[in-house]
Image 1 (cartoon, helix red, strand yellow):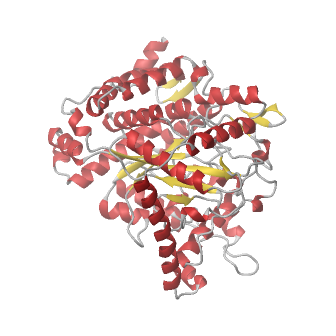
Image 2 (tube, rainbow, N blue to C red):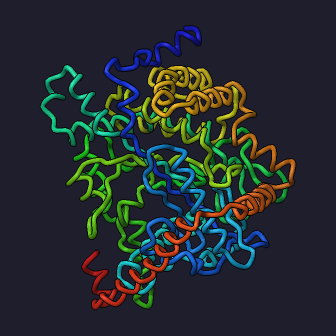
Image 3 (cartoon, one colour):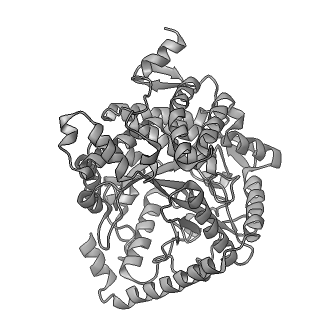
Length: 530
């Protein structure tokens, strides 16, 4: 069978633009970004200072918080009507951070961390204060460190959150000829379609890693005590030649405990049941570690496969906004899927905010493609094949001769990517028709260029610039200084500045109120939680 014949047989049918879909129905799309980034000392080591006071309380601030470590900032935008508005807010948050940083600190621009001390304990856990909820958040992070090592938790990424408007789903449902579809209420119909998008995104993760992956190399300090097959670029950098996103491979956010978790995305009750099963099931390795230390102080929330829902590492998640006291699965169960969270995205080190407009536009075209393409159920056998493909692409994605395993057999990776990008063209045109301009078609053309020429990818740029400058650390430091200078030249409007100042003050008051309202001992609180 020729290459082209293999290619055709691996696709169900060529993608067809639904005849009911109009540019107007894309007006309900909303997008938001959550972007992580380490604070770094001027000497290149991880910052060990507390979260900057001027930024308010990381427990209660709606836009500026921390992820795993006290040093790992997380910036969160509101949902916005256009990608440009989202990036504009993200840039405002970066300006605020840089105006608040002291002692010459910088924001490290790469996903894989800057220089870390040889002792894991030197990586400070995020401290959320003395309220029981705050202590529980810190304890969860302590548990992650006990389970997987603190080093892994310093990896940073970017989440792109996306939802589609009800107009699109109503038009789809009214044009769907099947009786089964007509019988569903709108929430259930949306759940089914969002889960179909998620299954297809899992099938397409390799495309994202190739096009947006920017972590082919690491500082040697990250590898301390880890088995790996990276090779030295020199004594200051290890790398995977032709690698794309080490962050998404065995060295990054994966772990053997979760590899065989059978959490499925074929219907919402099944997904919720799988996630809750993992939260309710003890794991012998974690049990052996103990939930408390020898002095009786808690070190992990519990000894289960997952301490809480958020511990489940997946390249994409269904999400619903949780109300006070509500777990993520309770929110999904009660109100259905509100949006999806795309998580397989490395920081773009060449952008001052970690992502550029072309990448955001590409992710939206891809999301629409995954939503509207046929999406058969996803079972463990296919999941295993997809995981094997991801590991190949993580380590060898830029190899022009790479073949990936598909249901129909092995297939050349580059033609597979090109075919999917070609099929996305009508969707890019439709998004441009809605927004005006040609940002989406330009983004797709850029991505097609990267498939044709692997040297144009972010990962190739990082590898080449690391060689040119002498190390990946030197590249990160150089870019961090450039980004700082650029961001500090920018000013917020007096109105925006005043609003953010009020938010910071309000967040401090809210944290104090939470702490004052707690009248239960943390150990009792934790016992009930467990």
